[in-house]
Image 1: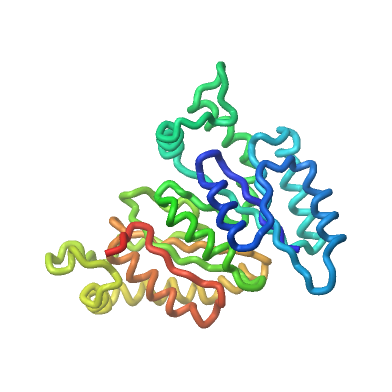
Image 2: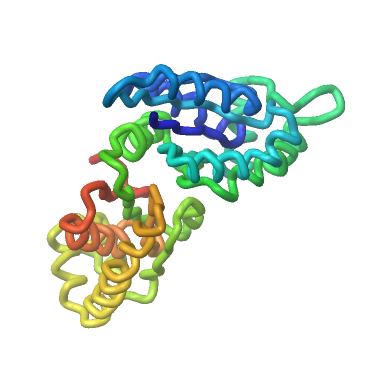
Length: 288
């Protein structure tokens, strides 16, 4: 049995994630009381025959009993100790983004009432879900994601994860658009020569040959690439040996167009032979 537990703040993308997983063949259950999860797992396991390995996705959110939410991390740890293939996904977004989304859709926050406004409800929800957020295998910040990008990310990283090996994502981003809060490791490339100040390269990005040639011509770029590459090649297998399901590596520069894209692409190519589940994503790039 493969169990994906989906949690996170309202408006951050939980429902969209469940729809993607359902389309991928998962049996999905929204807002399941966490106290009923042991019964579900026992029933599914009893029905499994031979090599049959059903896939379930269950949403656990702040509408659960507050005491159950506090105890939920211990329950997840116990499941893993029993050998269950269990992944915990946590979805989040910046407070300003959540406020805007609720305002645009005019939906009512599940924790808001006559005495609790939207902003207070969002803050309270974060407090209630903190124990779950702290043990998440994968945190996805949807602040900078369109609905299509969010669905595509879940499809590739979660539904499309092959086997039990660690899934690695190398993501470029621009610090001026906000740091990447959902990364396990972040490397800062802002000290490298910036193609932005070359007029003929400004409108290009790190995937274009002109930018590649420019950055390859600087010793500091090669030195940083060697340092990061050697670090990842040495330590990522250690994370995998520790039964990590996901690892997200962020490479940041100022705007997320040149240096971080170049470095992310190069690291992705270098690590492809070491990991079956590896992807590269550029947060700030838009399709041309």
